[in-house]
Image (cartoon, rainbow, N blue to C red):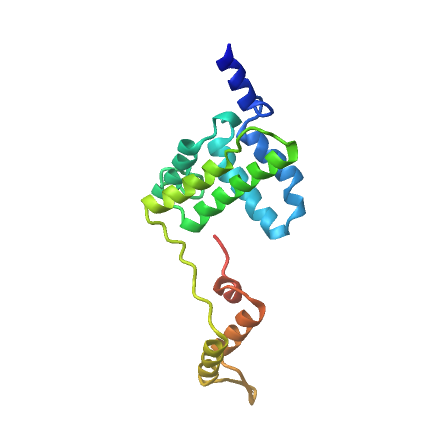
Length: 196
């Protein structure tokens, strides 16, 4: 009798919910409050990966082992989607999925004032364990200092200039660097690369 009562208290407010329910409610109610690009990216993660993996998992059963298995399968290339069959996901992609799931759980707990233990801490612990076990590097690039940026632009300016109709134009490299640095663009954005 007492074990049943403890189990009831531990799952109060979540017993009928799945992780998929939480993610869909989070997407509907919370995502419209963030930047459009974040909405698009997080919504894609929710539908392409998180709901596919955790969707039918009852919320009280979401724990460290399942969260770790999710990231491990992504990292080892065993978690396939139409776009990524059998290929490993990058560390940043895996981390972003954990971030979305953790944020959704934290939001849900606050929004519904649930007193039971929030599994969000297990989700983040799973990410940390995965990162340590497989030595996942996030590859954050080094930001150039003002002096380094000035030197790079000066060197790019020394490259041969384009000449059309008698007019002299800045070098293509200088123009692209200036655009990228001034607008905070990535290489693919400056060069107009598209995903195929």
